[in-house]
Image (cartoon, rainbow, N blue to C red; front, side):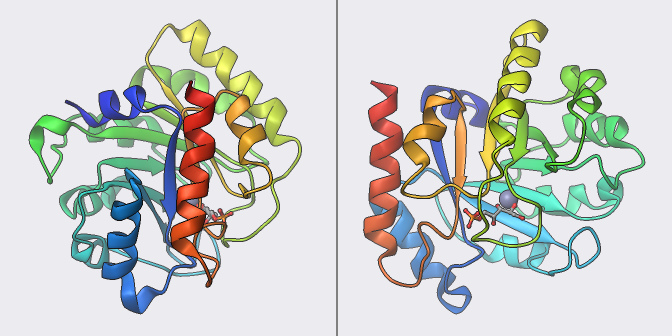
Length: 237
Ligand code: DX5
Ligand code: ZN
């Protein structure tokens, strides 16, 4: 089964972000997610240019040994010549941003030819992410070259921010755009999803929900992960 088919079948999927996890214990944090039945781990790669923080590069991504699908969110400048390294390091889903990318269409075309390094049968899910201030029209010429659209509900850079209210309207518009395209494109919402609003967010009809600090809050990651999964499962029935 391809990664896209797995995600489609399990929609809405919870992708857990590790930005606020215990970075010195990532192995056991990932084992905890697997134990709870999480299917996808969200890895925020920041380069200190696109957004102020620096996080992980390909070597750390490669070191994450896990059965989970690796959902890699590249918040980096000019990804054209960098995506191949992240794919070689084991990305299953790889999202790039148009805001600081001179050749977004070409980058997506280039990704079409890349093989999934974990398992070549799985294919790659190519995502395009949009900052809250980016007009949605940028997506139109890209719809034939992507499998996922990631709507950022917070400004890129940090975990634990509040979901920006205008996100709901943006999600509605992107859903319409996807329906009109007639293509199988996943819609992902990233940022600001908490225990209190996950129920509402799944009702918006997104296929994947990224949640970071609501799971890795420094206290009860296992209970939090199970709670978020249960909320997504309930909406599926
Ligand atoms: C923001 C990142 C998000 C963020 C999610 O730059 O892309 O993935 O870490 O974290 P929470 O769920 O804490 O908003
Ligand atoms: Zn992210």
